[in-house]
Length: 203
Ligand SMILES: [Zn+2]
Image (cartoon, rainbow, N blue to C red):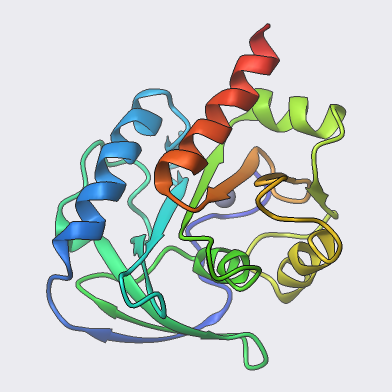
C-alpha cells in the first residue's frame, strides 16, 4: 500500500453535532453490510480501512457518508456517519457536521454528485480483481492520480465531460490501488452496477 486511505488530505471544517438522520444511515447500512461481507469494504492488515458509501439527503444539498476510519467495522451505528453540507472545490475544503468526521474520500463523492443533480448515491469499494478487470476491459478510468486530490476531482469531471453519467455509472481509479466507484439515482442502482461488473468478470 502506497497511499493511506485514513489520511485526510483536504481541509475539513467539521462541527461535532451528535447523531444525524437515521433514515439515510439505515439505507446505507443495509448495502454496506453486504459489501462488507464480500470484503469490498474492510481494512488492510496494517489497519487502514477502505471503502465508503454516501447518500444524498432529502433536501439534496447535503449527503450522508460513512465516517473516516470505519472500514474495519462490520456494523456502523448512527455515530459512525457524517453529514457533508458543502464542498468548496476552489478552496478544496469540505464542510461537515455530525457525530464523526467524514471519510477522507468525501470530496470524490461530492464531485460525482456535482455531475448531475439526479445522482443520489455513491459507492466506493476496494478489490484488486475488479480493479484489474476494469482497467483491462476499457471501463472509464481516472488517470494515475491519487485519491482525495484536486487532480482526481478534475479527472472525474473530464471523464464525464461528454459522457452521460447514467449510461456509464462506474469507473476505476487507476492511481488509487483497488479503487472502484459506482453511483446512481438510488443506492440499489449503484449496488446493482457493481454486481453486474463482478458478474461479467467471473463469467
Ligand atoms: Zn479508496
